[in-house]
Length: 362
Image (cartoon, rainbow, N blue to C red; front, side):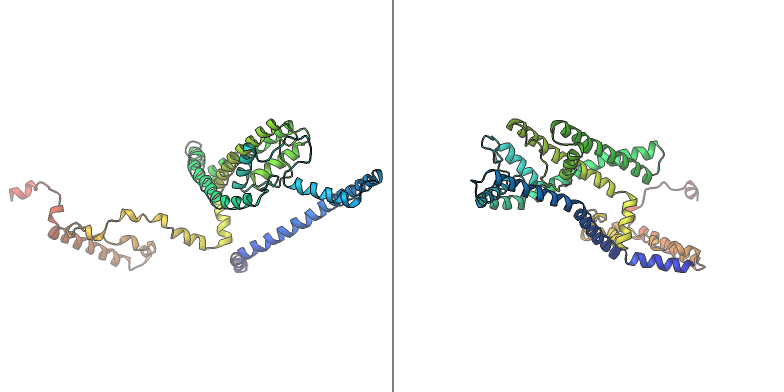
């Protein structure tokens, strides 16, 4: 029974990564099916409503040609997808300074709501060139800030819980990451959602929370954007606040994710799927080799060479072997010979000691 269980576990470990891939593809298929079941009826109802309103409009305004109405609707939809309003008295501009800064931050953080897009060919070319350098620079900045904050935000409190609360390091890290996740959810999801729900009268709490999640996850669908129904000044203020919210929120989320990534439970889960490859790579990590501490062999004088027996390479299992006393005698003999060589070749490195009074009497 035990051998069968061990064989089953070995088989699962061998094909764990393949199992992970299959589960991920199955997860995507299930998501697509669920969205199709949930959204297709709503889409059909909306299409039927639009067709019914179009039919009534043509019946009430028989002077309007159907082809002219269709061209107008296509143009309006085309302009709306590019953030251009169709109101004649609207003072909304998508490329004043505040809106342009908001646009730059959204695509540098890869959020990209899609409500504002370049309209000219020159703008599209500049956008591509700007992103080629801007997105890696943004990732570098966020990564640098994250690695600076993690030791101060995560390691110090975990050490405090470990030392003063008497918790194990693993348990202290798990408890602290849970507290950090709860605080992040409250400060960067729940609180902004409540604020948006109060400022945007047409938004429910679910819609406000949905906007916060879509924004900080850098999905940026663009179906909801604050400030579109307010005055120009209020819209610019909300766009600036959203820009600050995106940058600060991304930094906080990266710190939380980095803290969770350091958990032993997460590392064990990763090792389960990648096998022994990660462990071997971690052992061979070049960060463990501080090559700068090793001096050049040509700069070391011959007289300063110290001989030490390579005891560290002897396995601990040899201590249980009957041949271990012979190994120990060999190591002792080697140590004695090294000491003799040191006295004869390197006398200048011998400590100055006073002669024994007994030798003086003799």
